[in-house]
Length: 344
Image (cartoon, rainbow, N blue to C red; front, side):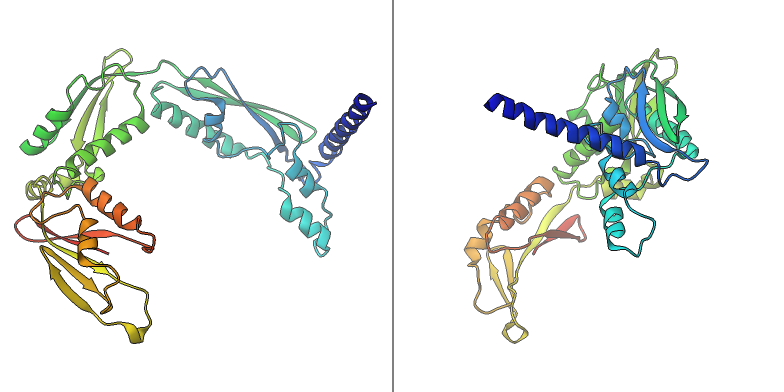
């Protein structure tokens, strides 16, 4: 008896699903204008790249309505169940919780092809091309993008052309001409490499080094599906005096800890004390944290070379205090390659 009851429930659930699909399928083109069509589906053909179809889908500039389990366009169905009289509450509710039909825009097909092609090139398929075709029946269009990826390019050599002896010395300690040999050419990974190079400089004193300074030159000339990568400085940073400033290490001078409480205006009373090589500024006479406690949270010391990692650890130390809502650290450049440090 229990088995029959379970089968009965199962049958009713399946019946409801089939009925819902039938009703929604019949009504989904209700608000599709004449001489237009609903973008019912988008598929990819001949995709042999390392990008999945789901990843390629993210680069489309027009996507079909969402489906539940790939079968039921529930949100579109809800919208289509609404009447045309928007003064009625039920119609407004159905439209608010629903999703209007995606009307095929052929201009966006071309733009999506370009977007897909750029994405493929960024992942190393430098000869990639795309095409698109579609069929329409009863105001419903099925769209197919065909991917012709070509070969995946690999990196041969990695070099750098930076007009600074100190910068080249740092790079030579961390990278060689073969550092990237055999890896897939991938713009995202090159951007990550640029971030890593920037961190290396900023962790050994080069406060003025920012990732925007650097870019890559890619050479594919006569290399048989291989590329040479060169790290260079962007033109606006190649002034001799500016290069000298950028690649000169900075050192810490004064360190000020600003310890502020949330107080009424009547309770505010600035109080500054000097504790060792640190200056502590309170906005109350009661000193909510003792100077020694604050000093123990700071990894930065006077005359220390600037190090971004240590600065971030100091901020993390302060934010770990339960009563601290916010912590930040800033640096002010001074003469003679020194920085004043302010911790808030």
